[in-house]
Length: 264
Image (cartoon, rainbow, N blue to C red; front, side, top):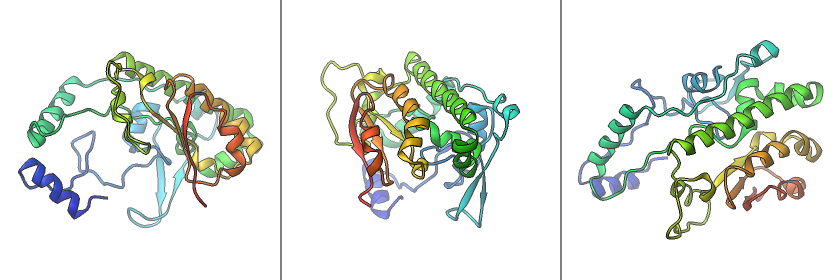
């Protein structure tokens, strides 16, 4: 939420009037509530289609901010075969243009950094964005093999995407050192262009309805696979749900450094 105090702060810092705006990856007007992915996904339908091959769709009751439900785009084997692995591609011209605009705004008062991670470390939320919540909850019971296949596909694709991002020089681990975890200064001499030196937030909040046994079968193995690769010793498990009975499972994550759960 952009508050009047924040607007005044940035106005003073830049020396020019600042008004809140919604950022977008294209030139069209942006609905600030337009992200249609599941929790931890912030992709609109076009971005999802570009990355995964199929859109993330929603059915809303009313306008932005009201209740919504995911509209499945993956319901059967034929749909599954339409999925593609996201590729990390840099649009140099568009990126440089945005950098120059940012520099014009803040001058030399702040360094300009580019955020490059479009895909979250939450494969269950991507699955729900593609299949819908109801289909996933029924699927772990009556289509377990299909759920495992889509989780494996999304997890491996997510890892591959971020390794490509790292290889392309798109990682800046310093950006991860102040988000929902205690702030730390990056030690001198640390290479901040690697995944290993950054924090990585893993989550599966929409899976709160799974029993511990089902969580251990359908979620934990894929989280463990990611956690071995995406950070050296700074995995942050984020959960706003009640994870009491799943703590013994989640704490087995490799490289786990911070574990956040709801107080409720």
